[in-house]
Image (cartoon, rainbow, N blue to C red; front, side, top):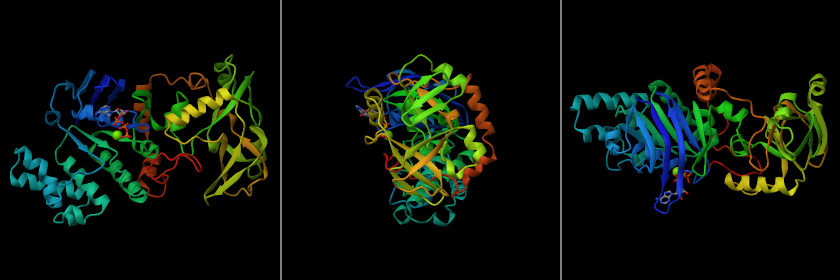
Length: 433
Ligand SMILES: Nc1ncnc2c1ncn2[C@@H]1O[C@H](COP(=O)(O)OP(=O)(O)OP(=O)(O)O)[C@@H](O)[C@H]1O
Ligand SMILES: [Mg+2]
């Protein structure tokens, strides 16, 4: 096991295109890091540079304290699991797992047997050892591929979208298994995905990439609550954060639906910038009629006409169209393009208590928890209201050790985390394929 330090890593392909542009990430020994971002943002390229399958144009790749830029992949001692598991069809599960050990010629038959059986019991593959890959389910094949990685006692695991070939249910199960296995083995892991649900549930920390540039590196919670810009805010969360045109006067924010008060410190940080983009997550709205009157009185409410509702049993979504001025519209269209999404109509998506009886076409009194609102600069996308995070490294180390039992349960329980085929929003773009 080893720490992985990526220092100012750049990858330019032959045509001069910077697929990875000055990325710096310190992966602590035993840490689980996620690389996430839309298609083409450079995730696989970065991972392939760690393993040694791709030359590094500039910057230093340091694994276990040693610079490995010029080392061949086999000398880096890392185990990689790909999306297509690349198992040998003519070999049994046992021999597939044993393969890297036989290849290394470092072990005798008894040692190999011990390692293979150890891995197979960890992965619950004991009863399948004599079967051929073609006769296994997708999840079982994925576990064999992981078994092959485990037996090697590699310094780190590297995964490139290992679950994207599986159906949604199996993906959820395997996600939990990978999480459990990584904790049990305590092995440094870098995991590439474009599914933000995987990113949020698996990672100690998540690096969000856009067009080769790392936009933010933080714990899932920090990314969700304190995104540094519009891109991260729009990428993390499902359904995505709502973006609305806003103007600020004192500590009152004027939205298309009315005025709401935000905390004074937030207002102060966003002052004097003219037209802004307000970001409010769907769950920070509620149908005022199903809330305690006291709670409603603490926040702001406004009236709006609901276009469409979607009732899902445990919650429901309501859609409320609004008009946005061209400056805001342009930034949002660009954002949709960056996020790989279809162009969204400007509409509010709100998540309401399933007890709400609101129906399509009706007017509703909507509560908004304006204290949670973010304000973004429309020209740069910068989050003006993000709380200063201080020492990011220390903060995330703290939270990764205090990712308490609550979080553990959430990733272990099949029913608690959101479906693996999570969608970016009803009616919106899809992030997981
Ligand atoms: N061999 C290559 N030559 C030139 N450009 C390449 C090469 N491989 C990748 N690229 C470019 O580098 C960028 C990053 O590619 P990469 O495969 O790392 O993206 P990704 O984030 O893994 O995307 P996906 O989610 O689609 O797998 C893309 O714009 C891609 O077109
Ligand atoms: Mg890729």
